[in-house]
Each structure stands twice: as structure tokens, then as C-alpha cells.
Length: 213
Image (cartoon, one colour):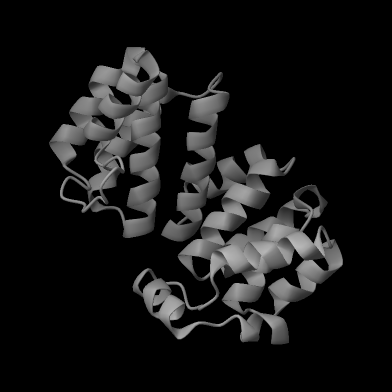
């Protein structure tokens, strides 16, 4: 914890706080520290229990994803207060867990929109890599009905799923683009030069162009 405190940078914190993340540690330095520590599951659990954002991010880098029980991951996703901790927990840990599919189903319709967004993130992973058994038309129905008025993080996750369906599944592409155009979610999102817009019709069109090019 002392070493993490020494890495604290007020300028980094100011930038992070604009995105809802209450820490000031440069992530490159955090990853270097994790590389030195290597995998340490017990230390990771103790770091998580501090409730400190930088410590939790470090915990997620040095933990053993498959070592967590299903209920532990469910508790952790509900404790993950900040966007970066939530994002890393889902992407670096839950996606590698043997409990990922069970949690995807449990979280998908959770009343907490942040927990539900984790369910959508896991669904998007399946849309891209292992879509057998998924009702893609049904997912598009839910997105069409609920995405426009969904809270920010849930809306972002649903939009990612919409884009991924359009990118990975040509038979649903026209409908996915049409839903994006009608709902106009993230249409006016400011995108950095060289980055693809998160507006689903633009995102889908650009990624398909790259695949075909």
C-alpha cells in the first residue's frame, strides 16, 4: 500500500476522476509493479479487501482468475464501485472463470444496472467468440426496447453488444445498423482522432470494412 501511495500522481487523479475513477496511479507503472509481483492469489484477495481503487486494480492483475468461487465473483462485481475496477474485473477475471456463463445468465437481468452491464459484457464476448445457443434476434429486441433509456454504463454495454452483433453476424447486420440509426445512442460522442466512433452504425461499418479490406 505504501508503494502504491508513492505512485500517486495528482495530475493522473484529476484525469481519472473525470471518468469516475478515484485513483492517481499511472496504469503503466501499476502494470510494472504487477509484473514484478507475479501471480499471488492471497495477496490479491487482501488488496481487494482494502477497498482502495489502485489496490483493487493491482489485485486484478496478480490474481488467479480460476481460483475465485462463483459467489466470490458475484460479491466482487457488486463491490466494484469505479468503472475501471468493474471493467478489469469483468475482462481480466470473470471472462477467464469457469463460472463465466453461469454469472452471465445471473447478471443479465439484474436490477442493479452496473451488475447488468457485466452480464451484457459477457454476452458480447459470446456474440463475438461462441454465439451458438444465443438468441441474437431476442438480444436485438431487448436492445431496441431498452437501450435508449438505460443508465450510462448499462447503455454502453448494450451498445457494444449491438455493434458486435452487426460486426460478427452478417445476417443481423442491416437490423443492427437500423436500430443504431433510430435510437441515435452515442451518435454525438466525441471521438479522438484515429479512433472509431462508438455510434453503432459507424462502428459496424468501419469494422466490417477493415475485415473485408
